[in-house]
Length: 285
Image 1 (cartoon, one colour):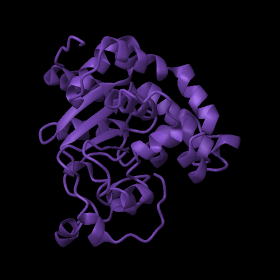
Image 2 (cartoon, rainbow, N blue to C red):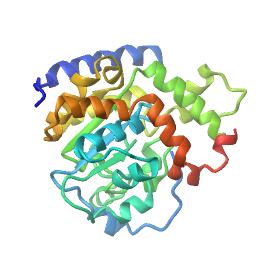
Image 3 (tube, rainbow, N blue to C red):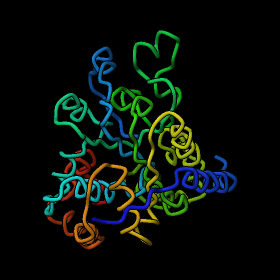
Image 4 (cartoon, one colour):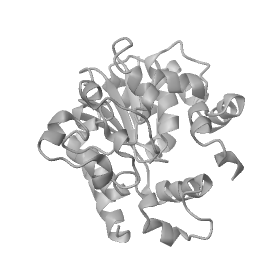
């Protein structure tokens, strides 16, 4: 059994708050989902108390975290493709994941880039008090992406993946350019002033929303850089938070099977089906 050391939530929040404040001083600052959605039906899709939401600003390493978390939760899960990872931990921004939301066993895990904030957008109670559609509040997201169960404020257990904003936004800039959402002639400085540099909120506000969420929900702040610099200790803390027992040997296996080369092999073998379906021309750009 791995010797577990409990993380200090106060230290985690203070460190992230300092990072947010520093980056916000430097920078002054979705995916379209056009489909019919029954607002009354999705408003009833409330997460179960033991459901877990993996949330992050885009390009923070959530694909990597998804592989790590799934392997921590299932000690028999060794071979894992992107298609299987998407099936086991669905993206809540997308319609098919909502359709399957009320199915499945206990201990489910879902993934989202949605910022946390009070007031579920699209629900009956939100509209009854004059709440605006998602697009009126959030930049670069379609209103339907805010419908429950993709409403983090209803979740009680959240893993928030956070990465150095300089690396995150550089990667997001390249990604948005690859998708054709940002012109190749646009500079990085131009990008930071565009709505396309936000996902709902800009990076500081997105992170701050989950720092605030920690007052109402059990939030584990998973730092991308910690997964690189001290993977065993970080995953050991995460396993404790998830309530799963892992051996030192299993931790080593999870790290090895989910390293950069292994992830590249998995992507080369099957691609990333959901991304490839949504953006068929992106890889050619």
